[in-house]
Image 1 (cartoon, rainbow, N blue to C red):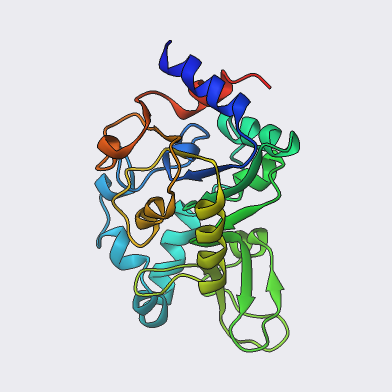
Image 2: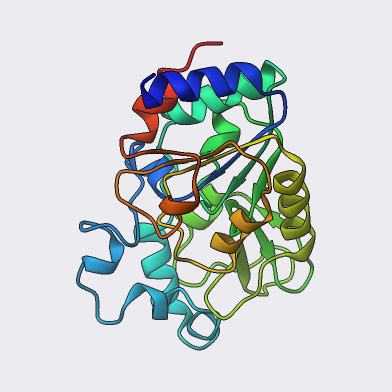
Length: 240
């Protein structure tokens, strides 16, 4: 039995699947990956992206933060790919119970997924730091300099987890519960090197742990099935 056939059989036999994904799920939609060879970490800026995308940088160098953010972090034209679409279909079929994602682009929701735990937040939510008025990403994209609240004038902050910030505990606990209770865990498009997100895989105690990634990960030896290929190609080939 080929790895693809094994994956198909396990999905057919499972009724409580959780998908845990990272940047590789969205690169096939044209969203840049931080750590790939052609990702943001390998492009040239005055300061590294992990410095620019930190809470202290947002606070003390907001003009530079927002210039980078608008340029690189708002892929609003990106469309869901085969992986996003298949996961939404699996949820609608009652097989997939949750998506846990490290991505902030909202493509899972665009594809139709409803139960999505966004560990690192979303560019689609932005709030005034004083009165909490909500702002859509288009407002951020079209604003100039430091985006400010039209009601009270205070700075607006994207609802994304910046470096130096902790994860939302309610979202984290929800993701842990989903992974702990599932009968099949599919991990895709992530190098599994960013913590605490990567550590979530350890909450799974079943015998159908699937890793789908173009490159090897530190957890390949623990998986029940490893497929080194395109996440869109692999999931797109699944039939319901």
